[in-house]
Length: 217
Image (cartoon, rainbow, N blue to C red):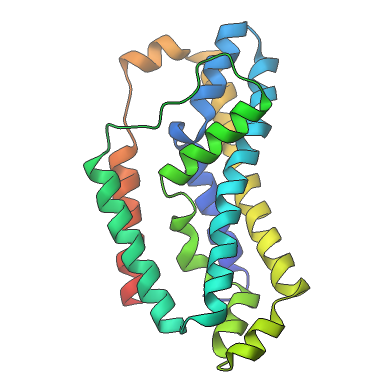
């Protein structure tokens, strides 16, 4: 994977995360319904996206740091094992979700809630296979001297990491916003409760599948 493909994959993963109601769009719809205002929905989504971005940034920085000192093959296989293990854990606990805040929330609550939900669902872990193919990360992985690698951590890798987080988060925010507004205007939370489709099992399956592909490719 090279060129523009890692960036397209990050955006596609962001769109996938935006579709998952556990990542925040359903919460935003609920807030909009509670206040009877689409503006309340739209106000909530940027803070939800900010919490998601923080969770993603944590993994992006962890992978970059690991790439400095860990052998590339070990990093790939370790990441694959982490994905498969976390996917199995999510599959076993697919009915359980973090419960922390009610519907009376402020911006900081929304950021913290979104960070917790994204982290608990392994949203950042799902990006590990793509992160290993980003320009700066791949370059560091090929240099054998750890001292050279440590000295190489600088603006290029930092800008790549920031751009990766921004690409993923903007795609997530765009899809979540479109879906939340569509549901708010046409469907409503009451209908969703009657015809709810739980995406946690497909989410867990995607974590496991990504880990398996990462190990064999």
